[in-house]
Amino acid sequence: MIPESVKDAVVQRFEQICKERNIKINELATRAGVTPSTAYSMMKPTYRHISIVTIKKLCDGLDMTLGEFFSTPEFDALEQEIY
Image (cartoon, rainbow, N blue to C red; front, side):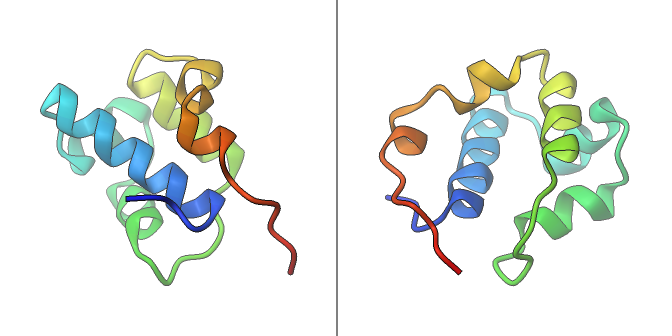
């Protein structure tokens, strides 16, 4: 599925990595040192904003860098978002 926004791309990327590694969102939150509610709310379509600090913590919990996380064709293909 092609992401429509940066937020969609971030959520899809975390879902993809968790699926590949057989990790539940709750486990990712524990590994990252964030509350499960933070991780679950990020995944909700109605939740618009995800902080880069939270993304960094989740990446740390996955033992990956921000560069590794964002280095995908999906992020490269995103259109500019104007609000």
